[in-house]
Amino acid sequence: MKQIFLFVLLIQLGHTSTLTLKQVLDTAKNNSTLTEALEQEGLLLEARNLADTSLDPMELYGSVGNADPIIGKDETEYSVGLSKEFSWGNTQKEEQSIIRLNNEAYLLEEDIKILSFENGIKSLYHNHCLDKKYYRVSKQNYQEFVKLYKKKQKSYKYQEISKAELMQLEIAKNRLYAQLQEIEMRQMISKQKLFILGRMKNANTTTLSCKDIYPIKGNIKFEGDKFQLSKEAHTKRLKSTQVALERYSKTMDSISLSVQYDNEIDINRYGVGVSVPLNFTSSRSEQERAAAMYKSSALGFQYDEMMIEKRSRFLELKSYLNSKVRMLKTLKNNHRNYKKQLLPLIKKSYDLGETSVIEYLLNRQQSYQLRQEIYATKKAYYNTLFKLYTLSEIKDK
Image 1 (cartoon, one colour):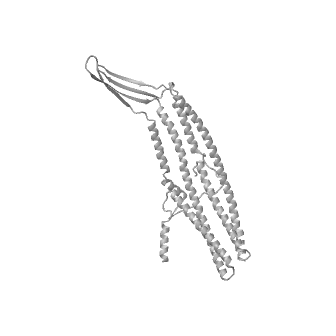
Image 2: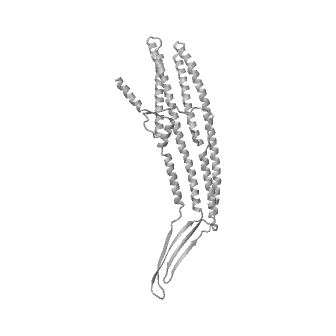
Image 3: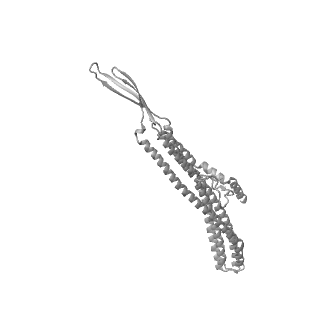
């Protein structure tokens, strides 16, 4: 029976795979439809642009009538012609450029969603690794307490401790077990969440390396130009207003040509026509130029306000990140001193009967709370770190 169990275990281990953070990211990006959807939206916007700025098709027109001359018999007369509007100069290209620049600005801002998705995957990976480590440490702590409990059971059997003391230890053991189950469930949920969001399979047979999590450090330097996507989007929108000013500064923007054939009773007539809109006779071009200038000014004010908010939020998150680093250092020192110095003394005192079970359990609970604070602080650090990367619009190396 034992051999069969070992054989099954070896088969399961053989099918278990381990993923690094890079592999998780690559898999998530390959399975994600965000990039593909954005590419398709870009194609859609360009097709719509070309459709909206296309010139009207050539027109075919004609007429037919019956002529009843004073002298002669009735005859049918008709005329037929073609007309076509042509863009003058590079007017059509400028109209396309205006729309294209605004579309490109929109797509750049949509790229931030992809960046946010990638940083969300990294954050979930780090959260699961913290959950995994926290579960392992908590399990070890529980197993150590179980050993103590079994030891005290023997002491109770030899009437070295009271029934009340053993019951208090048992209650503490049960509480630790319930906490361990909760931590285990949290670990499983964080893993499932990562695999679902990354559209990855085989969560039960796949483990995460967790050897490549980012080191915790303060005063992180963000290499590259911050808010680059927002800046590029703003530049393109501003450029679109400059192109609009050029577009509506022309006295002519189109010309219509037509050819016509008239068949009358005793005359065949051929004609060529030209139609040129005179923009200077209308205030439309002037108002379009004014609109472009107003838009340029409005874009400038909106951009300045947005950058102020982004920089303020960036400094706030960076300050919060640094505060978590300092807090973590303090908590680790406290927990180390508590675990290596105070707790052994309390345990020794308890074993010698100098300290009550209540005092011993309270001190163990204090150690547990410190470890819980360290875990929560690390989670807050990583969540803030990846929010910063998204906000700064920088892809970390």
